[in-house]
Image 1 (cartoon, rainbow, N blue to C red):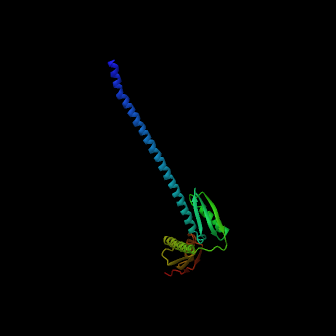
Image 2 (tube, rainbow, N blue to C red):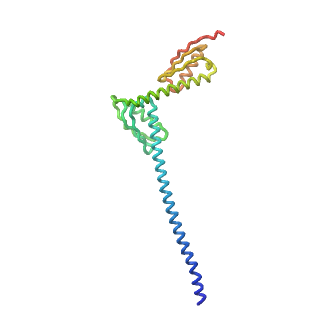
Image 3 (tube, one colour):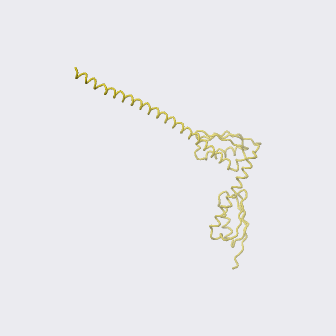
Length: 212
């Protein structure tokens, strides 16, 4: 009897330890589950924020593309982007401009489709602030075009030492100065014509033969 009692007594600490272990394991599991649940919630929140931020970023890209287009930036065109689809609303003066706006929006990287709700009104009043933006945009484009042509001329051995003036106004390039041959004159004109954003070239270069 004493032996049995000793066994019972010895088993009590084992049972107590086992129970305590189960309790700790249960608490740890519950804690891990709670942490995992919170992590999932945080991850979902982050993904949602990333999604909303990305759509806002796309929307900004579409607005910028429309603003930089000199045929459209005089009009008040509103954009709203969700699920990689942009909705265009506002008023333009022709179906051609409405279609152009849609194609520009669709050409923005990341935009998958366009919901074109633009209305056409030939008597639409042009937004004055947009007109100012248009003037600034055109001025910036002309200045960039002039710089590109001058850079190309500096890299061309045949004409880089010549005094050639380049002026760009509304994508029309005017060349002034002197060159030593008709071939050089044609070369300068060709360089200007093959520069991005150039519509036409007004070549006023004068051929002066080298007398040396």
